[in-house]
Every structure is written in C-alpha cells, then in structure tokens.
Length: 449
Image 1: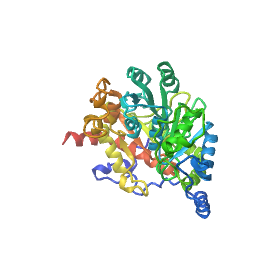
Image 2: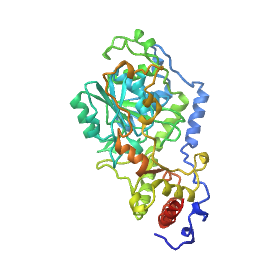
Image 3: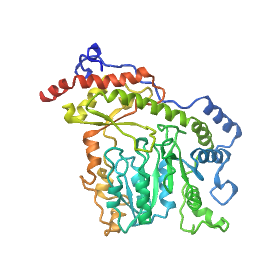
C-alpha cells in the first residue's frame, strides 16, 4: 500500500489535493443494436398490441412475446411474463398467489420499499424479519420466528446481487405451507448451485429500471414454472376482470375474484430488452472481475471487509457492499466515508447524486412513517386497524442486525461497474487507502470539535 506519495499527504477534506477530479465514466449499455431494434418497431407501426379482453392479442404483440420467450430460455424457466416495472411485478405476484386481507407476509426491512408494501395493496400485513449479518438477505432463523398462523408468504430479496438462502427459506416455506416470492431486481445473472437467481422460488421478479444491470428504461419480468401462477400473473397484468368471462374453460382454478391492472410492457421496451439480454452475461462477468480486483486491494486496509459470497452461489454485484470496523479505524464510519467521498468525483451523467460511495443503504423500512403511523389506506389505519389480532411491531430495535448495518457498519458503492478501467478502480483504492493512512487526522479533527 502506498504511503509516501504526495497524493496521500493531506486529506482533501482538510484542504489537500483530491485523488480524482475527473468524473467516472457513465454506465451505458445501450448501443447500435438497441437503436436498430427500436427503428424496426417504429417502422412496423406497432408500438403496443395488447387488448384488455379475451383475444389473441391478450398476450401482447410480437416483440413482447419474443422477449418473454428469450427471457424464459435464458433463465431456463417455463414462463416469463413482462410488465412495466418490477414494482408492478411484486404487486402482481402477491395477487397471483392469493394473498387476502388480514394475511401476513414476511418481508425484508433492508430493500426498496415496494418489496414490503406489495402485501398492503391486497390488505395484507407486512411482517419484518431481520437479515443476515454477512450476506444481508433474510435470515432464515428470524423468518421462522416471525411465522404465525396468519402467515401466507415470504418475500425474499437477493440484495446487492446475492441469492437468498434458498435451501433454508424454501424448506421453511414447505414446512409451513407458504409461498415464496423472490425479488431478484438486483441479481440477474447470479446463480445458486447452478440455478439462476430469480428462478429459486414460486415466483421470481426482475427489474429493467434504467439503473439496473440491463434495462429498458422502465420494465420488469416475472418468472415461474407453475402454469396456474403464470396465467394468473398474465391476467393481473392485463385487466383480469374484463377477460375472465370470455376465457374458455381451463385448469387455472377460480379466476372470478381476480382484479387486473394495466402493467403491460410496450413493443419498444420489449425490443430493447431482447438486445439487452444478450449482453447480460458479459456485463456480470466484468462486475465480478472488477470486484475481485477491488477486494484484493481493499483487504489490505484493516478496517474494511469486502462482503462475502454465500457458498455455492455467484454474485451479480448490483452494488459492492463493504463492512466497516470503527474500533480498528478509530473513527466513525460516517466520518471515514465522508473523507473518501471528498477524494473522488461523481459519475458522469449522475453528477447531482454526488460521489457514489455511501453509508448504510436504505433506512430500515419499518422506520418509515407509513409503518410508524400505520396509515396505508385512509386515515383509519387500514389494514392494521381491521385486524388487531395480528400482533405486529414496528418499533426501533425490531431488527438489530439491520439497524447496526445501517447506522454503523455498512458501506456500499457503485464504482465497480462495466466501463471503468483499472486506472479508475485504482483511484477508488487510493482514496480508501489515503483516508486509512490519515485516519488519525480525522480523529483529531473530531476531537477538536
């Protein structure tokens, strides 16, 4: 580790020269292939071909159907159903498995909010279990401790790009007769014992939002091997209540109670998605290579522990999580990261977001006013007020691992994405190294306040 370079002599936070002033290159996956595909759709004149009634076009246009077939083939799953967002996918999945008002659904407190609010759409109650201290997915022991007679499902999240503990969670679900929904928004291209993340549960969900591994601007995909669930998902996507009366007799069970939405993907998005999918494996490999390089370098800094990968799994690295040890560093994590941020530059096209090295991730979801006031729909506290027998707590301290990670130990960054050179990665390492070498100056500065 360099210690004598002038670059390391004085922290930028204290008036020294920054390690890097040039913005990091943007993450761009859209190229000529996508432009050509969009032009072909425009020339066809078919921008969407969904009809919200029982008809050949109930399943969408040629690009939507081709995209779904390509996705199913790539991930080796029977059914892929495209939608307009991963949030819509979560809502559709909760509806498809038959969640009803008053049911309980175990969810993660450390993820995007929709993973937890999806049950509320159907009048069900989110129950937060804690997460693993090393892998950050739902902790099976905490999940089991939160299962009651009212529990009907578990929403697991492949957070940061790592698959959940499939064996333990799925065994729990089978034992208690529960469905599992896998939020794989951050982990397309990861694997658990050779099986693709997203295909590990009853229903899997992928995101095609603009800042994901691959994207269509906005969009999402659901996958399942269950014929009945797949057809229910398609109905919820496309005005189920207007379709079921015209649908021929089938083996899909009782569809009369389904309410549908408009969660449909456009032909343009589907055309882009087909080209993006071809790039996924290569993009994941670059992320893995970049993280391997950073891990080798950063492990020389004693207060940092780059996150581990679950045995038998591969990691898609939506972000690169790092654990921080304040006792070793002698300064608080927030102070240390503030100094790292001062040494670096933002990402091009995302300058307003600041330097993409951050503390925590999202605040524990149950801290949100939605849960603290228990007012989801109307001012009467529905659904909680309708089911007082559901003994649910959203108090601080509910998930101690989550809260410690958020407040004290979690660092995450995006400076490992495809498009970064080794020189770019070296600047990241140098910034962390410089702050480590000057940590005593940080402590002295804090002591003097």
